[in-house]
Length: 365
Image 1 (cartoon, rainbow, N blue to C red):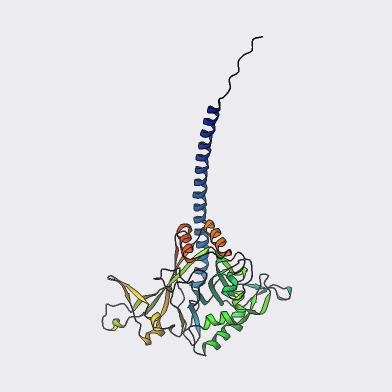
Image 2: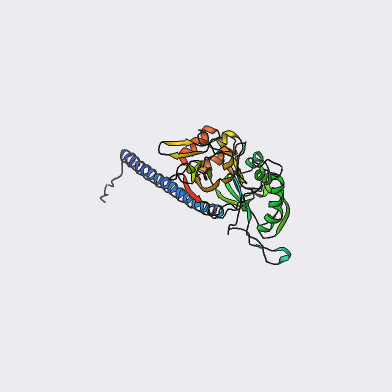
């Protein structure tokens, strides 16, 4: 029988084919990785814009409905803590370090407030419209209650940066919160009145089911999981615009009756009967924009009682989920340094999301 000779691949041909296949697979993997990274970055930016837009809309509703009076109380306060919040330790907007976020505390007739309570298993409409509100950026677990200290919160498992919005219902605000704040304000330290009240006092609040809980520590409740507004926010800055009388208007008929000045991020202030600052340096940090550039202003003492909040320019920077995972891993291992923190922000943070909010209501005398 005549056997047909069968052809076969040589070892050199097999090695060459394997090399070509390896190159093809490597190219496909590189392209796939690039596509996944691009998709991840784009989806992260979209999520950041969505979260920033939602948070900005809620803040707009609250601030536009802010309620203030020109009396001896404190109705609006922006407080910058002395201690760092995570890696955010910059003292002002000119500092090269990541900046400390503000605690913004005020009263508002917002529509986004608790409307019902279920005491005695009956649904009851909560009377009133005015609520005490606090915005605060913190480093803690979004699933656990606050420990009451920044160190304890930061040590919680999976602790990370989040913006919290605490709202006390109108009944508790009227019957407990406002009288308590008024008593503290009468002692004279109005700059830290609202900050100290939120940090040191107890109040009746509503739980997630609409039931009243009495004697709750506000410092821990304000950072409860149900008050979490948004996550992955690593930079939160607010510039306030104020209006004050123009003393030059009496000498020149063409001069406007009011001037506009700006309170930059990093400045602690309180507003009640007048605009008050923690020290002369903060007071002198206000500036106005002229044709020649930025110019610092000094408002006369008698005009501080006629200063009005006009607007708030809010800037928020979110970090991608990839960057958030890396930061959380470094934080859990206690290996996060300030240099590495700034590097990750530069690589994984989205562009700043800005929103201008104008105050609608005028202070009541």
